[in-house]
Structure formats: C-alpha cells, structure tokens
Length: 152
Image (cartoon, rainbow, N blue to C red; front, side):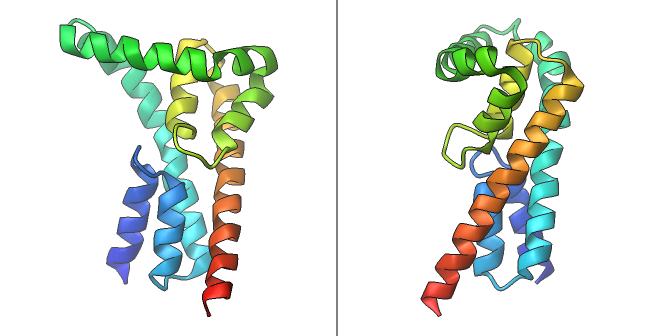
C-alpha cells in the first residue's frame, strides 16, 4: 500500500503526469481518496521550487552545451507562443488559469518556465501556481471520483 502512495507521489512530481496522473493512479489503486489528493497536491507543489532552482542555477551552466541550448530555446519559444500572450495580458490570473487547465502541456512545469521567462515575481508566481495546481487537482479528483462511482 505504501508503494502505491510513493508511485502516486512520483507521478505527481513527474513532468509526464503531475497530479493529473498521480491522483487517478492512487484512487484507482484503492488508496484513501482524501489522503491521495493531499499527497499528490503537495508533491506537485514541490515541483515549483525545484524547477525554479534548476532554471535559475543549473540552466545557466547547461546553456553552454550546444545540444542543451538548442532544446532549451525550442522549449522557450513554444512556451512564449503557447501561453505568453495570455500570461502577459492577464498576469497573475492568467498564470493561475494556465496552470489550472488539466490538459497536457499545462501545469506547474509550464507555469514555472513561464515564471522564469517572463520574470514574474517569485512569490506571486508560487501563489498562482499553487492555486492553479489546487484547482487542477480538484477537477481531476472529482472527475476520477465520479468515474469510479459510475464503474461500481
């Protein structure tokens, strides 16, 4: 049982799933539906400071490597064209909405990259990401819960 909490937590930290995968994984594997929400939400929230540290410290060093720089520029361009106008226009609220959308390509990883690229104040950005992650997690939790009720 503990292993399923750890796997749900790892999915929530992963850029391939975040809490959008961790919550359904935990709920569908019989974990306590309330505890899995809290564990996955908090795990997903940890991504912001880790990713921001990476972008501000480690990224600067890695940009010296050609293959990394090429990939980083590609990701930055995609982030700016995909979300840039909305986040610039709506600021804090735009960042919340962008992180909140429970679809691929949005979430705390993209929200942290946007924070870094658009030089948004870190405290405001953390709060916007936290609110966005919370609402995204609630949407996923409710969708999974109701889907499980239909399966019973």
